[in-house]
Amino acid sequence: MDPPLLTPGDADVLLFDLGRVVLDIDFNKALTCWAGHAGCAPAEIAARFVREESYRHHEVGKIDDAAYFESLRQSLGIRLSDGQLLEGWNAIFVGEMPGIAALLARAAKRLPLYAFSNTNNAHVEYFPVAYADVLGHFREMFLSSAIGLRKPDADAYDHVVKAIGVPASRIVFFDDLADNIEGARARGLIGIHVRSTDDVAKALAELGI
Image (cartoon, rainbow, N blue to C red; front, side, top):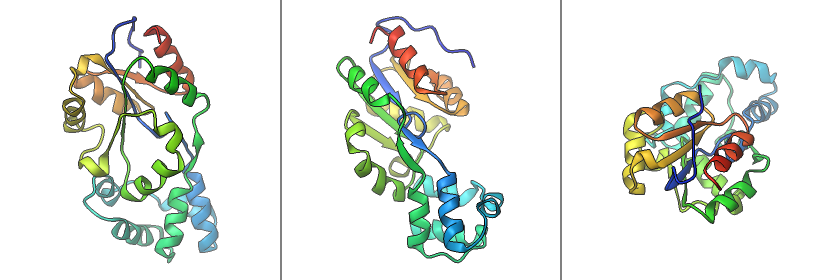
């Protein structure tokens, strides 16, 4: 996916995905935690885990945490408590992406920053507290479980653009998933595919930030 050509003055707003852009995510941490409680190998659970309908419904707030955890018990074949499942579910957050805090602090002095993430209620209750400092750079966070819409659906981008109140063509959006970048570009946003913090740094430098 070719990066767009950016020049100073191209953006009025910077919009960031959270997972693997601002916050480092390691889903193996969840598998290891659950396997430890269940007394089996993480590979056994990994082979059964799929992001199916209940996963998507959880991300847009159609089902609550308890309902999703019950679906996990069924699909994974493990009889863990909600507390044990929640422990693993939140263990995926392993820290900030290297160097991102300084970049956000610098960018926030020049342009308004917003976040747009596919997530769920259990994580929303956890990461804003655990990572309050780095997330404090965002004026607002648009979270799929709160707005009832998720990337890469067109309605999700349209909702966020309308809420921010500037044209899509003046918003630079950073995400680690190619599908989400393609969805954003289709709705008129400037999409930057993030494979490491270096991609964020490069885009900010091109914008003169």
